[in-house]
Every structure is written in structure tokens, then in C-alpha cells.
Amino acid sequence: MTERINPLMPAGYDIVWSVIALAALVLLVVALVSLGRDKSLTPGQTLVWILVALLLPVVGPAAWLIAGRRPAPKPAD
Image (cartoon, rainbow, N blue to C red; front, side):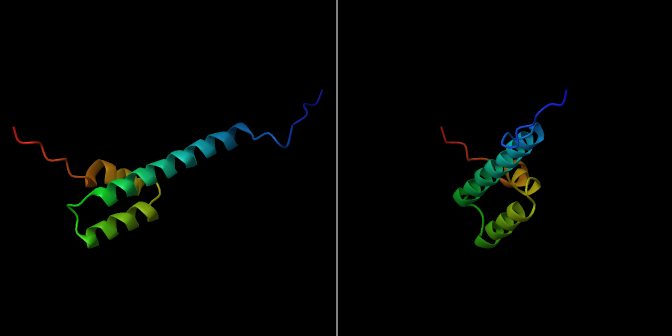
């Protein structure tokens, strides 16, 4: 018996790739928002980080979120 395939239903790998693409997009948006809020960078540094985030799809935003962000200053007691 041959199995009928519904052409309107996405295959499993389509769903997986869609989730991966969505995760990469969310990571990019989070990194760009974080970059926009960081006031300790010069405009040139910000531009370089934005270009890195845009040109290196997953590695760029991850690099900013892991290594580029500076820790928030601790409040004085």
C-alpha cells in the first residue's frame, strides 16, 4: 500500500528548520536591542557589533551576548 502524502502539510524537517530560523531571528533581535541599550560603547563600536551580528547570523549575536556585553555596575551600598 502506498502512503498518500498531503502536499499542504509540512514535512518534519521543514518544521525543524523553521524553529531553528525563528530561534536565530529571536537571538538577533535580542542582541540588537541589547546593543541599542548599551551606552558604554562608542558609536563606532556599536556599528561594528551591529555589522558582526548581521553578517554572522548566529555567531555574531551569540558573541555579543556572551563576550561583548559589559556587566551592569553594582549598586553602591
